[in-house]
Amino acid sequence: MDASLHQHLPVIAVVLSGFALALSLVAVFPGLKGLLSAVRDGILWLALLLLLGGAGFVVWQHLQQTARPAASAARPILPQPAVAPAARD
View 1 (tube, helix red, strand yellow):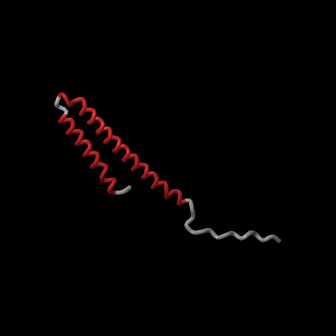
View 2 (cartoon, rainbow, N blue to C red):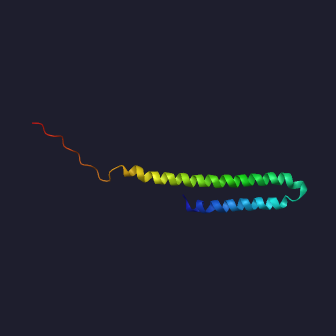
């Protein structure tokens, strides 16, 4: 996995969560409460899906990398010499 993507996933999640917290603080005004709570919930769902998708991608990539050496281990490193047929009398 790219190191930059691995570093950016937590940062994006923190930014989205901070934005949701800011919306929660603004939602104390009675007229904006319904709209801002819906936007906040949408942002939190987006952050959750982003984290779960990133974690799933990391697990999938790890499984792909660990499966690759096992498949190549079945092949011999050096080619086997051809066996000459047995001579018949």
